[in-house]
Length: 208
Image 1 (cartoon, rainbow, N blue to C red):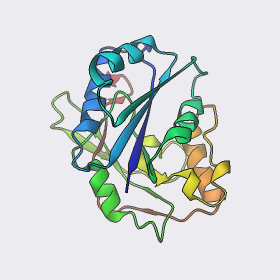
Image 2 (image 1 turned 90 degrees about the vertical axis):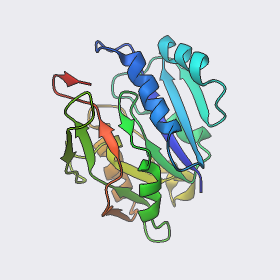
Image 3 (image 1 turned 30 degrees about the vertical axis):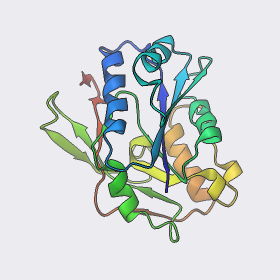
Image 4 (image 1 turned 45 degrees about the vertical axis):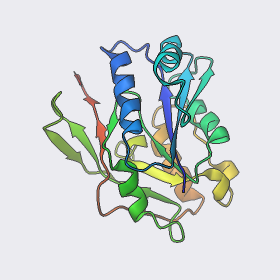
């Protein structure tokens, strides 16, 4: 079973070392123990993203780049476009300044029964230091200001009944709205018992 990891990338935000963090995120994808995977990077009008891809990753057959014009803040367009070219039966997400542990994808697939559920969600980690030795577990539930792209994995819309209606919207809270769209369409879901290893690397005024 193939897994498509979607990453929206805009490296023009006023935060430090975004280029290095982008490479850190992509490299964490490459280090996954699960082999049948692809990374789809959607460059949100970002020349830095395109340049980094061309320099370091254009030779990787399982990494695709889609450059598009700059979108509005909190736009869902990047992920909707990625749906159109994703080959995987399963879709999951990775932010360009976060990290996934080596067994992240495998841990999800070990617990995702495709015959019983259409999407799963799970707690994630927040690193409190640059050495990644102090991790805080964030308890996640499908409610406003709790769940986001770091905590969901779902079947590709093409494999879902009425999947053509499963689209990302634009606006603040679009990640929660996407989850609510899945529930409103009647998709079956569960919370995973064993946490995967998605590590959020920024919160409030701290950035690692």
